[in-house]
Length: 198
Image 1: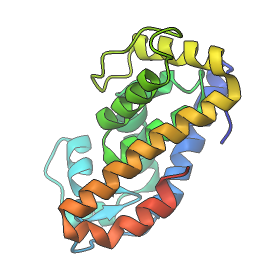
Image 2 (image 1 turned 45 degrees about the horizontal axis):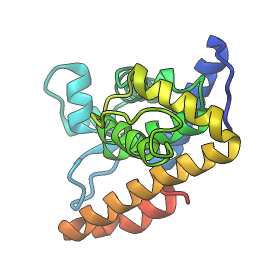
Image 3 (image 1 turned 30 degrees about the horizontal axis):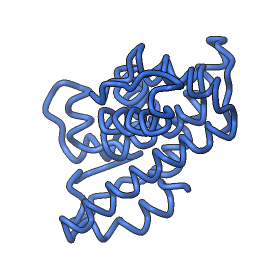
Image 4 (image 1 turned 90 degrees about the vertical axis):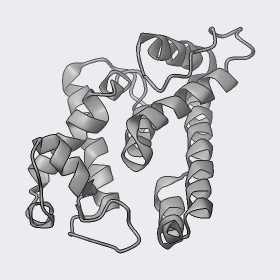
């Protein structure tokens, strides 16, 4: 997906739908319950715990198995796009939005927003392009302002570098959790092959 600096709502909605479609393609549409996966029963990348939190009631593996794609899309939008404010990134840079949403699905939205902030801070030329951000894992107005300032200064090439920096942070995290929990090694190759692009 390429960058889109348009702020038209219809384009943003289509971009978000495309981002969610890409994630569902990566996660798969079949029900799984891999013994090494801490998430347990999963379908469309939606775990039992995520579904239970979304529905706000006790949920079973059977509920996950019966999960419809439309509901999975709503969960992705609410939990991984709207609630963390990543929908505000779409009109600024679809490429960055793709990365924060995808990383948020893999590692949690706060961690994904933190990687964006860390990368922006490392790339701000010692504060000459924009002030350092508080690295709080919240993609609020200050983070959006820094992203806009960065892209204005660095352009398309800078956008690619920012996404690469975020992928490097994600890759290091995935290697760390694989080293600290051996069962994660069942997934490390796939994570790096499908989710980390440098």
